[in-house]
Length: 225
Image 1 (cartoon, rainbow, N blue to C red):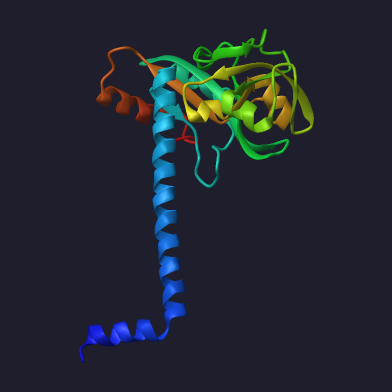
Image 2: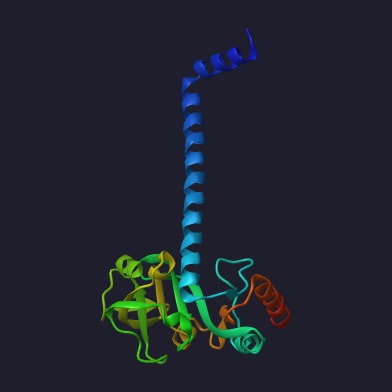
């Protein structure tokens, strides 16, 4: 009798325990494969989103939380002044429970910033300006919330009318609720705060140039990454 035979006998003598063990291992492997697949899919969706917006650098500080920590909106001006930066825009992004949905991405975007340009409106319209109390829903967000143009959405304690439904060309965008930065700051009590700065660099910049620019941003804004 060898060691392998002893193992097989042990497994056959306790069939229930063996079956449960195999089931547990199978579930564990399936869970890992599913999580890796979801992570890869999310990463590709974010890459597609950034490419669509033409964003070269994303500035924030996500350490210790699900979303980046808020910082002063004046930080954007410091980044804009750095040589090599072509254009910037800022936003405040939070993961919030929205009505019956336990968690959704809600994005308050600086009015007039270039991240508004990629929103293809398929129903309704864009906000008239940054002061209008309305939201835009991605196609997936509209489906999850069961909302259409003209309905209202409750964010924290404020109601916002749905001005339009858009196709953002990525899963991340289509699952989001989007409104102007000032309106969202007021709704969540974070006036004057942002947590992300999106940067476009000058055309023709090399990877080395962008890497050097990132180091310069780290010096100017040590509270971010």
